[in-house]
Length: 297
Ligand code: IMP
Image (cartoon, rainbow, N blue to C red):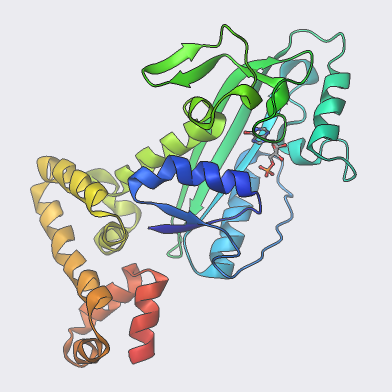
């Protein structure tokens, strides 16, 4: 499945792909999807802004869109900069100017505890919306440390970091900017939100949640997954509800056929198909498939 990221931030694009690629989900930029959307972040919560961004890009591109609204909430500053993290100190500041300002505002302040928050929203063209929230607790350093990452990374010391065998307490007190991408992704606010979103994606495709988009829709989504993800979801589904797994598999053939058909077969399909199948194919298909159908109608 291909999602458009509602952001111009190249580093977020890399992080999202790192975390979602194993699910068979590919995240592309607005430019790759041929859109350039400016969204005014008028919300007062991460949830509101995240939805505003994802919905605007989904509407402009006609593709499923994913947005992240994130920020740093510092306890001693009553949660600031929070949803205003990207605009802290006004327009004239860059990342370095913003973290310097934060450091100044933290002079003499206790406690130095803080958390990064990320709310990820995924909007689908059929009106479905999935939302996931992730947090990462930590403290604010007394001076910037490290060159990696972006934004407030040099000032944020997470409580834990990721290791191949799980999470470890950050006793060395390394900042986000001093962690490798893997060490950060495993514990980061965005990593946690994406893990939550990952569960929602696979829930969407299993028993109880089929109602979110209907069987047709689930079949369409499944059809866009890679073979490994598809197999693991079917294994799971067959164990819990074999009848439903069969139903989805049957409907998936319709999409599969259309994707792989040559032009003449598409025409034949359009001539001979049961109108119900056509509606179903259009309803669940991604834009590549529906374009192909429309071109031939
Ligand atoms: P957004 O693009 O409106 O979500 O703005 C989020 C802002 O929060 C960014 O511009 C950064 O300043 C900050 N931010 C979000 N995530 C991170 C992160 O992982 N590291 C450092 N800063 C972050």
